[in-house]
Structure formats: C-alpha cells, structure tokens
Image 1 (cartoon, rainbow, N blue to C red):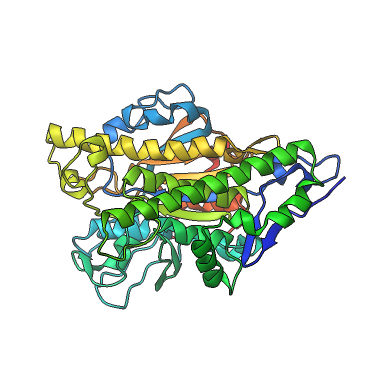
Image 2 (tube, helix red, strand yellow; image 1 turned 180 degrees about the vertical axis):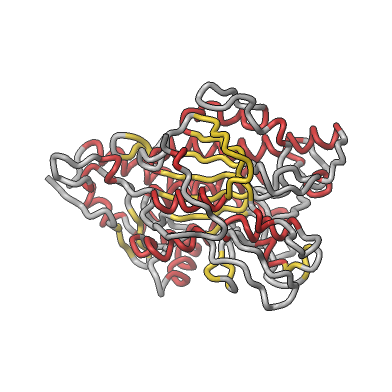
Length: 443
C-alpha cells in the first residue's frame, strides 16, 4: 500500500502544489487515531468597533443555549462552537495613557501587552500569540504563518489619538517592534501558497501570459501520483483540484472586473469589487492553506480597527466607526447589529467550507481552533471587558464545544491564548497578564 509523508508536493515548472490530508498519509500503526494524527490549526479572526452585545450574548449558560440574533448565522455549527463571555483585555485600557481605545484594542488583541503611545517609529507591543506558536511549530509547514486581511493598513502616521497607524492595522506582531503586515490581495496569497521559491515571480508572470492554471504545471506529477492512490484518495485529490481551479477562476474574474471598472488606472490585481466576494475568496484561500497543511497558524482582519467602511451590501450607508458611537440611538444600534450579523455570516461561510472537507475520521473543522472576536465590547462605551469572543472547532478533540461558556468577570483573554497554545503544541509558561489556563475549555 502506498505510504506518503504528510508534507507531499506536486511539482512542475516554477510551481509546487501541496496535497490535502490523504488516507495514504495516515500512520500505519494499528492504534493510531486518525483525527489525533491530523495536525491542529490555529486561527484568529478580528472584526473592529465592538458589537451590540445584547444581540450577541446568549441568555443561557451551558449547553442548552439559544444563539442570539447576531450569531444566528452560526446555527448549523452550534455544536462546534464555544461562545465565551467574561473575557477582558486590561492592556487595551488606557492605564494612564488617555484616549486611543481603538488602537490599543487592536494592538493588545493577540499581544496581551500595553502598546506604547506613540505616532512615531518607536512602536512597541507584541510579540503576538500567533507568532509565539509560529516560533515553535511553524517549521512543520511551508509557511510558518499566514496574515491576511481586507483593508490595506498604514505602518506609520497618527491614526488614533496619538497612536501609530501600525497599531490599528495589525494584530500579528513578530516582536514588540515588528508588526506582521497582512496581505489583502487574493492573487498574492495564492502565489504564496503555490509558488515554489526563487522563481515565483517569473512563474507567476508566465502563468498570467499563457493564462494557464497551476494545475497544468503539475499535471504530469499529479497523473503519476493519482495512478498509485486508492479510490478514496483519488476522489479527495479530484475535489481539491476542483477547488484550486475554481479559486483561480474567481481571481481571474476579479482582475477583469477591476480593470473594466477602472480602465485608466493600474489597479491592484485580484481584489474583487464586492466586499462579500473579497471576504469569501480570502476565506477559501485560508481553507486550502489549512487543508494542504501549508500553514497551521493564521490571522485574518475583516477590517482595520476604527474602520469607517460602509456596508452597502446590507443597506448600511453610514460608516461603521461613526455608527459605533451610537449614544443609544436605536436606529444606529440596529444598523450596527446588521453589520455584526453580516460579518458573522461570512465567518459561518468559512466554517461551512471547513466542515465540508473530510479529514481522518472527521472534518477539517474538527482539527481547528478558531477565535473570532475583538478587544472592544460595546463600541460606544469603548469597554474592554465582557468581550465578544467565539471559539470554533474542537482542536482534535481537546475542546468541549456546543456551549455558552460564562466565565467570571475580568478573566484575562490571555488565559484563552495560553490554553490554545497548549493544544497546538506550542506551550509557553505565561503570557501577558494571564492568571492560568482555562480548564473549562475541556470540561
């Protein structure tokens, strides 16, 4: 019987295509558990400006809870979720530094540290929890980590009451002084995932010139492998190839749409005109990155902190940040709730995608730990306690999902970070103001 290493690539001229988890990659020992053998993936998904918490927080604690309106798109995945209440980020508070809650909340979300108040070059925050994980397990994959987003950010200048724009534009920090800039262009993410190294730019240009798929470049290697696989693995590979081809076609359509809309400009390539299309294309790329074990660690900013984007897709013409200062105006709060629900809908789409991908005896979602949230509770109050946090995925059976987990008030968010690091094999002794692990994740 064919046996393949977990990191197997199909190769062609200037291209390398990772493979999904196949039966041929399972450990051959009789006692091996296929779900446990699959790698665990860690992801953080950030949205800005807080939430309308009365439409976010379930009324009941425990397993018998009802998803409130803003979380209703997650109903098909309720058994795969932990809705967590009670978490706080003290280092997002002023602590003597005055205004700037948006910048602090973004900078503290994954670093758990108080950002230095400066609009100059002497920024100081991280390192972030995702990069701590990448330092320990990133060598196991082609990309140690992947940072993506929707809105381009600035790394300099004053964006919030004396805080550098770097704080509002990044949640991932390599070190205290070095944020990890996110990629917002789907085409560039695709090339990172499937390029082969020093010849990436040349190979990409060659594919663009001839309008060939990356699958054409690895076709010979793919045919040889396919002949050696069992029927189940052949089906998985065919489905995976179809997904890759479909994403390529969507990127190509986005390029054409953008060029058609702006004929006198040289626009960024591969960014769809419609926000929903952009959000979902990036989610699909991340799903393939996880599926192929190209990376196990990712961050995704659905918008920059303090974003004033309008959401015309759902009829909201006012800016998000402007609305978040609602002063209890019912109309503004209703529109904010619409935005909350819209963004949750896009996250639910990602969970749909992961749950549709078989892996071992379960699904790809079963082997993920995905944190969706931010470090502001109510955007009008700018509070940093009782944060809107969801954890999706079972972490290979290490998390007891299907519950509203109501924690004691002021439980440090860093306790959650430590607990998730443990589960992906990247244990650290302490992190920020953490007071311990969240034992309730698995009980």
